[in-house]
Image 1 (tube, rainbow over the protein chains, first blue to last red):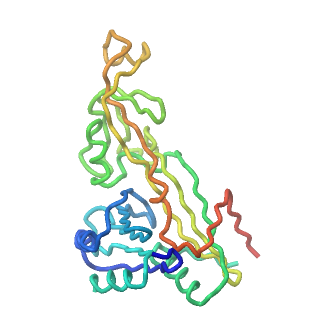
Image 2 (image 1 turned 30 degrees about the horizontal axis):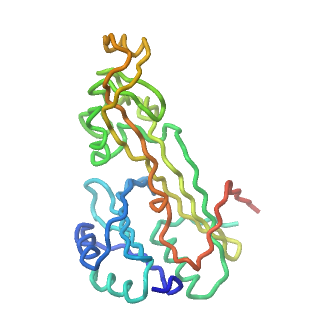
Image 3 (image 1 turned 90 degrees about the vertical axis):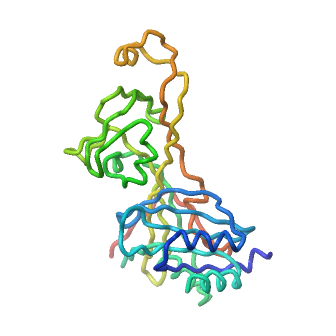
Length: 89
Length: 185
């Protein structure tokens, strides 16, 4: 894949992060690493998925919070972005 | 000069809009390590605290944290004995063990305004049992005779570089900077 073709998209979705993880694994992404981050005074569990040059990070707020709206940031081809957005719709 | 703070979603989407509108811009990134007692064991969520549960205990969020076993904090080179208070529930702003972190700041300037996104990446605890040379003072607190003994060791590992980066395409120019100065007109 040509690196120059990669595009970026970030979305916040109201579906559980487990479902997002499962969809990414089904699409051939693998977990690269996890980390705990803090932004806006909130703790997040950030998971990075990779497939070749494509990268998807899923940040899910830690704890019993409502609503849970994981932030998904995709750096991938146009078709990968549409596929992920389609699965999460 | 206006300064706008964005969350990750907003910042990345703003960058995407700029790329699509073919604007020329550069993203500045500043990554700095902090160990300033901003984060302590009493004020981290339960899910994060569980990673430290082998060496310490607490009744709940914002409750006093005690050492469950004697252990060495390898990052700061300190020793804690069993029952020692690690973060008091009555002094939440002053933890005894500081949890180090990387502060990551992304920003770009457009038409005289600055748009930024900031987050902290916490170091990851890694608790092992190791043979350590303990000083006489350390040995006294746990009534040990041998200087070289097996003890719990709390290591704090920095997060992977890729976890500190935002997922931006390669055509985005990122400049790493040491200091950001905000100028107010």
